[in-house]
Image (cartoon, rainbow, N blue to C red; front, side):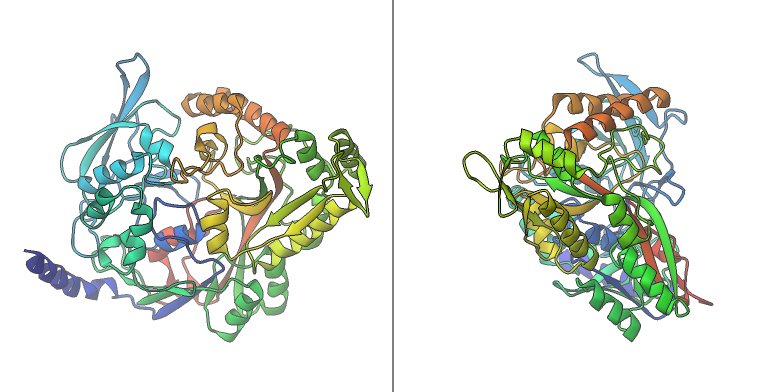
Length: 555
C-alpha cells in the first residue's frame, strides 16, 4: 500500500507540474542575514524561519497588508455576526466560545496527502503537551476540545472570549502522516527529531506555493514550485534563500549579482540602505516600510545586578538614544519608549519616558550601592565591579555599531560592559531561548497589530528545562499586575475600555523596565528594478506570505 500511495503521489506531481510553472520567470535569489535554528513552524520563534516557511505553507488566518485579519487556509473568517463563532457558557460558569473553520478544499501536502482536520487535531495534541517545547504553548492550552465535522471542517472550543477570538495565532499545522509517529515515540525529544529538520526537503511538509528542495545548513535553502498548491501559480521556477550573516558581504553579493534582492525583514540596516540608495539607486528599487519591529535589549532578571530597578533605570538614562537614531539612522528609526508602536492604535503617547540624563543615571547607581569608582568602573561595598555581559547577533554591522555606542555611553557613567556576540542560529537557538545570556541580549520582536505580550511578559511563559524551553519571557519577568492586565486586555471586547488597559500596561512596562527599549525599525527592501508584486506589510506577516504574486516585469 505504501508503494501504491507513493506512485499515486508521483503521478499527481507530474500531472500538476505544468500549471504550477506556467508563468515561469526563471530563478530568484534572495539574501537574508540569518539561518533558521529549526524549520518546524511551532518550535522557536525566529524571523528567518517565518520568512522561508511563508513560501511553503499558509496560516489559517493572517493580517494582510492593510493590517486586517483575513482567511488564508480557511474559506471564511468566523465571526459572532456570521454565526461561525458562538459564545458558550462553560461548566464552571465562565464564558468560552466555539469557532468553526473550514479548510481550503484543495489544500494538499506536497506528497499528495490532503491537508485535513487530522492535521489540525494532531497539531493541537503536540501544542498542548507540556514537554513538546512549542513556542505558543498557552494558545494550545486554551483549546478545550476540537470537534471534527468532516475532513475539512472543525470547531474549536476555547476557554475564553478574546478580542482576537477568530485569529488562529500560532496554530501552525503539522503533517500528521509524517510527524505523529515521531512525536508519540518521545514527545520530549520531538523538537530535535522533527522531520522538518531531519528531512527538510520532504515534499509532505509543504502545502504552499513552494516546497523546500534542498538545504545547505548555515548557507542556503532552495525552493521549487509545489505541484499540489491550490492557488495562483508562482512565477519563479526556483527560489534560493541565501544566508549571508555579514551585512557588508550581503551588499557585495547584491552588487555582484550573486543575489537578486535583499529581504527587508532580514537584510540591510536602515543606515546601510540609505547609503546604498545614494550610490546605487539607479540600479535598484529601495522601499522603506515602517512597522511593528521593536529593537530592544532583554535584561536577564536572574542576574543579581539587574534585579535592582534603579540599576535598570540608570542603564536607560545613560543612553542618548535620540542622538543615536539621528546619527546612525537619519532619524528614520524613532526611539522606542514602550513595546507598543506609535503606529498601533493602542499606543499611549503619555507613557513614562527615560530621557538621556547621565547625572540621573549616576545618582541612581550611587543609590543602588555602586558608588565606589576605581579606574572609571563602579564597584559595590564588597568590591565587586559593575560588569555586564552584552550579546547580539554577530556579523550584523548595524547592531554591532549600536552595541559599541551603547558600551561607550555606559562606560561614561562607570558601567563596564563586555561584548559577547554569537551567530544568529546559536544566539537565538540556544543562548536566548534557554536564557543563557549573562545580562544583556539585543534583538528585535516583530509582532502583529495590537499583539498582546503574553508570551514575552506573562509569569508562566518563562522558558525552563521543566517546560522544555517553551515561552518567550526570556527576561524572567514576574509581576502579578502585569499578568492581570494581560488577562484583562485579552477578554475586553470594548475598544475604548481596552485602550485604557493598554495604557496601564505601557505605564507598568516603562516603570518596571524588564527590557531596555531602543528604537522602532523600518524595513529597507532592496529590489531589482524588474521585480514586481512584492508588498511589505510592516508586521508579523512577512512579504513572502504572498510570494505567488511576485513576478518579473512583463512576466
